[in-house]
Image (tube, rainbow, N blue to C red; front, top):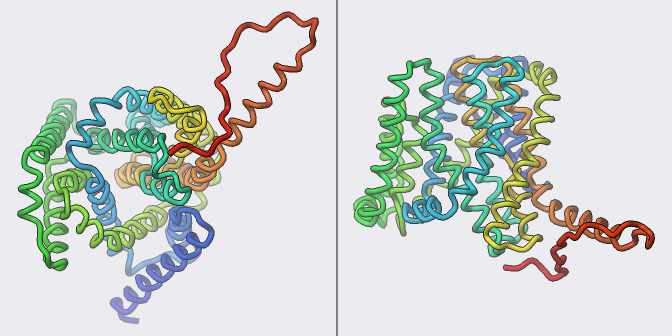
Length: 415
């Protein structure tokens, strides 16, 4: 059969399969990411039916998927929002990094993978999935809750941190020296700072220049600009994803809203291709040996994310119910963990890192919506039991030490 015909058949089957998996996930009311990863495992190295002719095109589509994911993320925030969050919520960001990055780094070192792999796995366990969490908040009707701004602030700080983290990872994986790596980081920080400054001062001007009432022209200009900036950023060893993120930040107002509506289907398509591509390069037989470390890491970092959200919400003056909801909502990992692991897999630094990251994300992207829904009732139920057991202590027992129990409110979640 002609190679172009084989390509069309393979790629058409991939897109059709992704569409069917997406519909199945919608009916089951959970994220389609684990199904996309499983599809990649089925048709990749060591899978049921390895692809051939379409693999190179899938690789290009996967790279575009990462760029569009970060562009759309940048469109969600204005530069002033980012600066405001950075000023007021940075303690929560530091706690988030300490509690959730350290377990990943520690496991990599315990497994003997070395410092570079430790930095990579720290990023995999640190960054929550903005896409999954946003969908969960919408599905549970919590977008208006008092704890939701706290959750979004932590996600924004994680996204900002990626603008610094990704260039560091890129330099480490490229094996550059300390001097070159320092120059790369300085360039990344300088570009990020410059873009934020320009976006704050001249964001409206940039948006007017890019703006167009014709959807076709708007799509072409924004997509072309994003790919151009992403390519230049990658040439400077900063990261194509960071370049796309900064373009999204620079656009605001009606342009950002219009671009979001136009690019959302493209993002969903290429993001799905990206997850499939990551699965294609993971041998299913390599997952069972790392499933126990992945499961242990998932349990530990689920608890640390819950602790992060609880602490941040308490600091913001949210009630106990809202604190538990905030913590449970942050558990899901997804697209960004796979992006980070994908960089390491491409560089070939550690054969087991890709399989472990795949298993880890599969566990938490399924567990995340469940913790978002059930962390609050479980925690409050345990609190009631503890309070009840304290009330029925024997009379002859020594009086307990004074402790302060916050009253449990039975009212509906505040909004």
